[in-house]
Amino acid sequence: MPSDLSIDLDLIRRYNQPGPRYTSYPTAPHFTEEYDTAAFRRDLSSASSETPLSLYLHLPFCQSLCYYCGCHMKVTQNPETIEKYLAVLKKEIDLTAAQVDTSRPVVQMHWGGGTPTYLTPDQIRDLGSHLRDRFSFTSDAEISLEADPRTVTEERMAAAASVGFNRVSLGVQDVNQEVQEAINRVQPTSMVEEAISWARNLDFTGVNVDLIYGLPHQTLDRFEHTLDVTERLAPDRIAVYSYAHVPSIKKHQRVIDEQALPSPDEKLRLFQRALERLTRSDSRRKYRFIGMDHFARPDDPLAVAQDDGTLHRNFQGYSTRAGAEVVAMGVSGISQLGGAYAQNGKAIPAYYDRIENDRLGIYRGYRLSDDDRLRRHVIMQLMCHFRLEKATVEDHFDVDFDRRFASALERLKPMEADGLVTLTPEAIYIRPEGRLLVRNVAMAFDAYWHTDDDQPVHAQTV
Image 1 (tube, rainbow, N blue to C red):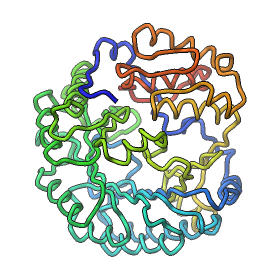
Image 2: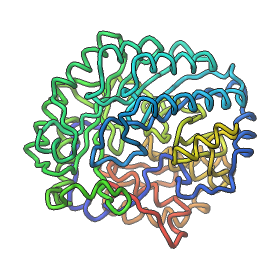
Image 3: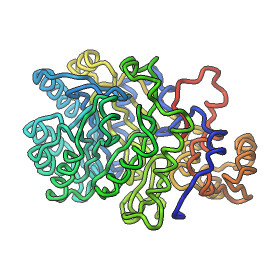
Image 4: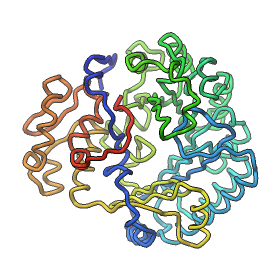
């Protein structure tokens, strides 16, 4: 991966359009209720005992509402509400473990939300111990949780470490107070510094910092300051997410003053600055651009996985453990099995009803066709590694690549003319200039994107 990356704003403007993030293929809007609990039980129990597991737990509760939020979350200050949810979640864990060969190695686990660090230390230890009693974790499992610096305490971090957590992702978003006030997330940088210090002292092997660009009152100078602080914090990974302003879907975003949002051009310049700052060769701590919105130190497992061809994507984004089946528990969680996806219900009362009646939490899903599997492989190779060897696809799937994907290759020709991709008889390469637009390249191979008349709402590709 070259250093000192920069982007051509004119090209980005031309290609910047709504499109999927390809955390799955087909994407979640194509899931249907025809895929039910019975189908999920069969698929869950049919995997080989040697197939590793990646567990995902969704903990939806937060102490306050961040106005930019697009997650499935619920604000509560009622401890009984959280206790009720955890009791039902533990029952779902038991129901799920009963369907799985629990000798299968758990190589990865992630707690998302919501705010996992809103749980008390006792709740973190209890839930973590419950999972370890039911599943077989490997000694080198990557175990991570998302954290709001406003809820992180040394006791909570110590509780997480005691049940095996070794990575933490801190939601920083922006360090400027006017921006923080506009999104209802005021957190002094000292809170973030303290959380990182606790994690390092507790031997966490990875600290991630999440930023968001496109927030109200962000300017180049202010975002430059956020980048200064982030580099000083020296995290192992940095995510720089694009804010998706969709008040028609997320009603609470109507609180945000749209006049205070950066213009589309200003927003692109914010990401341009982040890309150039984080990858420049004289950066205080140089980062590798992994893809889309992810950066990692060159020796981080994410960068190593990209180098050795084992990087892949799931609903948590880029991941290091290719080949693991994701089993998700909690509201809205999405499982990714070898040949199927399954999503839990998003409404907490309906989720409770399903679990309390021993039906697991599934309300919809999708079983992949042979064509889906083929296209998923192509899309994920491009998304993760920026190249695709046609012969490898042909050998694995017994297809003539150029004939099967003639229309997709035709769609890529304008990108080739613009110097974004290189098409050869043997391979497809995404050039450094095109890597920001990897979603556009993937869209060329998406059969549903080019046949569905009514496309779901997606964020811009950059």
